[in-house]
Length: 91
Image (cartoon, rainbow, N blue to C red; front, side, top):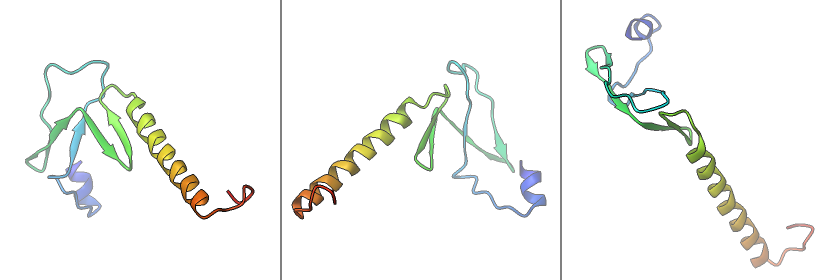
């Protein structure tokens, strides 16, 4: 990956780069990953653009989190529309 980034003049912040190993169960022996001699952290889950990637590949936590956020937003919209005494067709 370092050679590719170097060829295309891409900059990678290795301190913010994480590795997730996707598998059915937890890996007992973890490999070591390096980017230009900087050791990368191996994590069980990682959030990217509000999507939570988990090592087992399931998106249950992401689905729950996004549905909770949508529910809160809907409640807020309904509460404000009722506070403003908007007509039913506008609500």
